[in-house]
Image 1 (cartoon, rainbow, N blue to C red):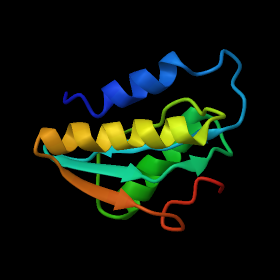
Image 2 (tube, one colour; image 1 turned 180 degrees about the vertical axis):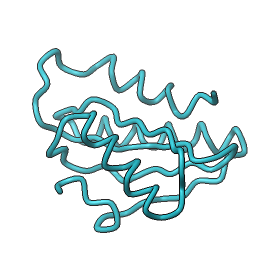
Image 3 (cartoon, rainbow, N blue to C red; image 1 turned 90 degrees about the horizontal axis):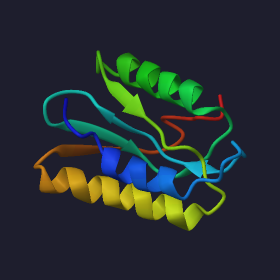
Length: 111
């Protein structure tokens, strides 16, 4: 399976606090050989598993079956998450992937 922005997620995890405090995150999903969906940074209202499941459901509802979705652990520092999201986008552009930006309210993680 393709790296799916694991580099950015790994970087975000390195500096994440040990406690799972509410904070900022984003989600990225691979929905085909070269199709990547990425959200903007948002305030996490749920745990990672729920966010990933909600993002997969949103993608499935928009005709993207079998997507693999990941959201980094939320961080208090929004700037760090913005940088991680930018790193993920740059990584996939270098791979030649097609990026599809998902903006709220299309994907509303507060549900």
